[in-house]
Image 1 (spheres, rainbow, N blue to C red):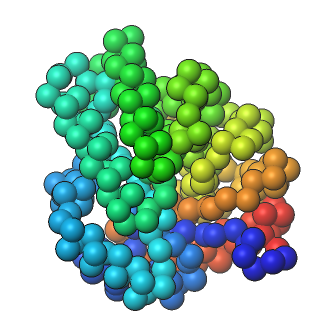
Image 2 (image 1 turned 45 degrees about the vertical axis):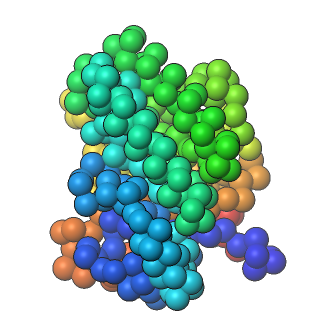
Length: 289
């Protein structure tokens, strides 16, 4: 295989030791064998502040990527849980749109290609027909901004029912109709909801921006499921079948190991072990030579 066609395998920022400067964090990911990092802009004030970086801070960030030789290719924009596009509160919706504008600007100005969106109309308030309508209107507006900036917005398949499958994402894609609005399947979330994962992935042929690689425990009548902190190989995800399905539809994009190591005594050892385990399943599934 042409080495330039080898699938890129990234690592989620929150899997890496906290508190590191960007140059050091990227070097740690590189030395653990990863090809890129996915930045987190979550609900915390510290990470939300990244969308307000000055020109100098953005320049320093670009320099850190150049110095380490490892890029940040995507942003996980989960800050919309705190400021959702579908909120009944007009001020929260204003904050949500401001966050979207600034995140797109940050991506465009630092070379980040993809912003992963959280598929929540609201999170801390009741979901209603009105909140879902406001959410969709916000998505359509955001896709227009993204098109102008040539930044891809990719909807994650989520840990909540609204966006718990690719089938549930497709109607939004059909109505918004933008090449800058794609889907970001999470193999753990897809599996936990009991979806037929190969069938779901086939529905998204040609529309997958990247794939989250994560294990999970399935939702049952007597159990709400577990969508994080499930060690690879101990959950419900049939990774080999999922990778085979992706190979069958000709998927040639990136994969992102999503994990958390805040309870691990040695986070670097954990992310290295995870990479080795995932790559072995990727080889079995035919997406990695």
